[in-house]
Length: 116
Image 1 (tube, helix red, strand yellow):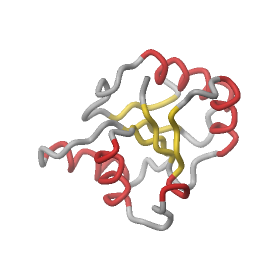
Image 2 (tube, rainbow, N blue to C red; image 1 turned 120 degrees about the vertical axis):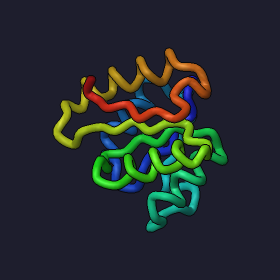
Image 3 (cartoon, rainbow, N blue to C red; image 1 turned 90 degrees about the vertical axis):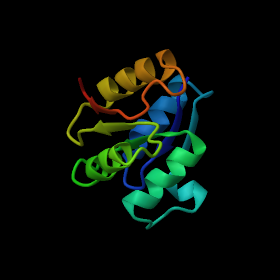
Image 4 (cartoon, helix red, strand yellow; image 1 turned 90 degrees about the horizontal axis):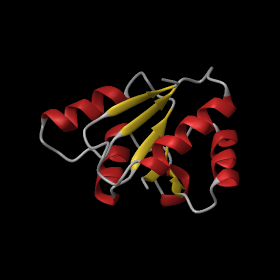
């Protein structure tokens, strides 16, 4: 199962729904680990050090920083980009399938977009 880091402005309704469906998820929020207000590269650095895939709605900048890490040969455990206008129930279902059926390291260097 993947370990997750949830970006600062991520929809908490999705987080609560994920925990309701699977209370064993290893998921922390940027705010919980002292990264509030940090820039995207610092968040991706922390995620890489901790082996956590980043959940985000930020399609504007995270993608660039994530691919920069890959190009530079730095670890990038993965990013899951979720459109803000996606149906919450479908996002929760899709995330659960992805997180529960993937093994640690499986999304290394990848950016996934939900809904598919």
